[in-house]
Amino acid sequence: MDQIEINTISNVDNNVTVMVRNAYKSYVSTNPILNGLNLTVPKGIIYGLLGPSGCGKTTLLNCIAGRMTLDSGSIKLNVQKRVQMGYMPQSLSLHGAMTILESFFFYGYLYGMDTEIIEARAKELIAFLDLPSKNRLVRDLSGGQQRRVSLAITIFHDPKLIILDEPTVGLDPILSER
Ligand SMILES: Nc1ncnc2c1ncn2[C@@H]1O[C@H](COP(=O)(O)OP(=O)(O)OP(=O)(O)O)[C@@H](O)[C@H]1O
Image (tube, rainbow, N blue to C red; front, side, top):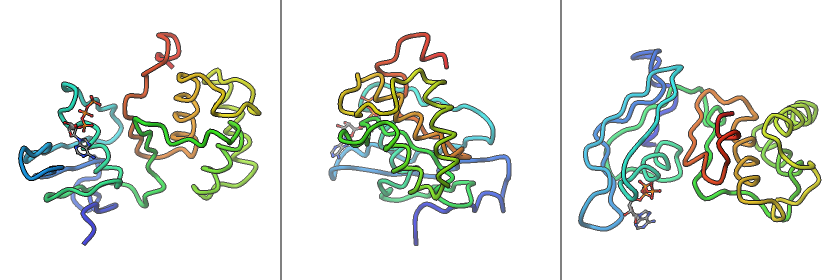
């Protein structure tokens, strides 16, 4: 059975968005990175994961996002389907040869969005996040600009659950506030 159960929390508690129970994960046979971890994220709140470098934050987020599986334990998400999740990875998964606008279209069509909605949301987020021209190639953007494109793509389909891994790296204090 899939370890990540979509929309099963609502049967238990509709005020919870993410529920992780008894999570174990190792990369090698010794020293589990996640060792019996429990986590409950209530609906409608911003939940931050703090911990020293290498303690397993990205590992946990990757498991919640479905990019990795736990060795044991369970993850339950209160979303109807995976597309209602927006995940911004620590290492950005953008295509350098695409323009900003092409990136919106690429991911927008994957999300199942209509052309007009993609265009409207792209325009809105390019202005809000102070991005350069929509025709600039992603590979020619600064690190902070690329991170903002990645953030825009993560949120532009209006997901119910947003998972951001180190979203403010490379941003100045004013942009970080947005
Ligand atoms: N694919 C992998 N194979 C083996 N070990 C890994 C792998 N990915 C991560 N690790 C190790 O697992 C541990 C947790 O890594 P993880 O990236 O989850 O930490 P983190 O808390 O997000 O760190 P940071 O704050 O530095 O980003 C680290 O010791 C890391 O070296």
